[in-house]
Image (cartoon, helix red, strand yellow):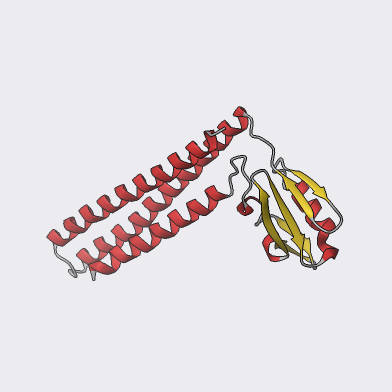
Length: 185
């Protein structure tokens, strides 16, 4: 019975950390990465569609990417979407593909990104605490319903707190690595 609660905690916090990693991958460090533009919404076929669903995106060198639409009719819409995304990238339409140039980051911009990374980390920690709270409430209900003993209740509380502490350390490690990546020149 109590193992279910621990599994819920593990699953919930794993999703939070996976989401954090995904979010941080979209924060650029001055190096080209498909993740920087793959989710940019493009108005194509009457719907807003993520860029990755209507074009092939490749990293051509550390400072640029090429976007090759599967349907050349979407070229102008892709170009406009990349410009409107306000990512600070240079967008060049060559007639059959789009080249995306990534400028060097200024120190000010790097510091802004560090603040964003820290805010996303705090959101992740709050989410882990929310999962912990839900699991703890379920364990307390199980104690009230006499499904588990009081000793089991405190043992589970200790396990949960230790697990959340480890998750927070993992979040901090992820953030520290991203900060280091952002500060590299």
